Amino acid sequence: MAVIRSSVESANDGRTEFPLSNLPFGVFRHPNASARIGVAIGDQILDLQAAAKDGLLTGLDEDITVSCEQDSLNALMSLGREGSRALRARLMEFLSEQSARSRVEPLLVPQTRVKMLLPVRVGDYTDFYASIYHATNVGRLFRPDNPLLPNYKYVPIGYHGRASSIVIAGVEIRRPCGQTKAPDATAPSLGPTRALDYELEVGFFVGRGNARGAPILISEAESHIFGMCLLNDWSARDIQAWEYQPLGPFLAKNFGTTISPWVVTMDALEPFRAPAFARPEGDPNPLPYLSADEDRLRGGIDLKLEVWLSTAKMRAEKAEPMRLSQGNLRDLYWTLAQMLTHHASNGCNLQPGDLLGTGTVSGASRDSLGCLLEITKRGAEPVELPNGETRKFLEDGDEVIFRGYCEREGHARIGFGECRGVVLPARNC
Ligand code: CA
Image 1 (tube, rainbow, N blue to C red):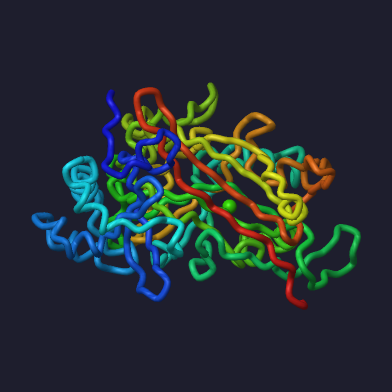
Image 2: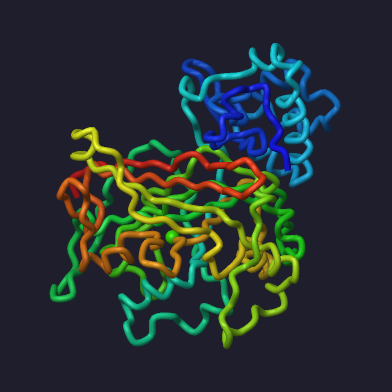
């Protein structure tokens, strides 16, 4: 299949994460200007408010035009897949016409000149636990004889996270204080976490929601998903170990969650769909409400994911970040559709802009583990960095960088941009 060229030259160089076939949505701000919606194209952003003013969106439903003039993606998300699909088709046509080049240019803003903002007002945030490798590895550290709990292969496990502390990539994360208790201590104490970790995850946003009391069929689940981003579920393992029973994660995780700025649509990911995880012989089939042929055949996404670390010392020495791991979203035991369907199966109403996290994406191999807890076996086997430093968990000044991209013969490579965050020292506890 021929890759269609854009009139924006930087979108055609084969290296960009944002070729014409990607067009992810985000919210940006020029210095001293208000927040606006744009799509990434090459190293530029197409300003959708300016595009609407220019008459470029004329003929599309008025709802779509109005949604492009907001300062968040929520209105566009509420229009469902059809809304963003019609808008993308229009933008793709416009950005591929070489004759429209002079009309395109005034609507472009270089990505280096703007600040990216949270693209969505997230009403609710839920984090799942969809990698069976992660669940098994973590379970083994805490319960060596019984790593995987008996509900795992039936229930897409999740917990309700905290929307207020979701931040855009680049915002620093302060080391949290919390209660911890060493195994040999008689009582817990309050102090900065000594086991700060990242979790490599993908976030997906709800587009059109469902009414309270009205579950979502698995066959319709994907029509409720707008698109995806990278997500870092920062976690304080020592706080988590002391607080997590019996109700699950709480203060160990709700102090900060970082997301990447661009929302890659499900339409852009279409060429990279893959079969769902193949359950090994002997595993139960999902219950019927979580089971559909289409989901089994195409419920996976071949999305490669990488974690990079740059310490303060490495940056001072002008050393490149070090890659800690590389994984793939295909390794998830549960599909996005199964997670979303399960979430709404009791009648819980999901709303446009709700954020669902997949849980840490870990694979079977040693180099595909999505957090330091697994990589260092809870600190027992520290990672050695090229400059002689070692890490059991994150230190102050460490920067964690996630990258994600899809590649397939005959298609332009598309990427997600970066999900970055630097760890700041704790405040006085
Ligand atoms: Ca998580």
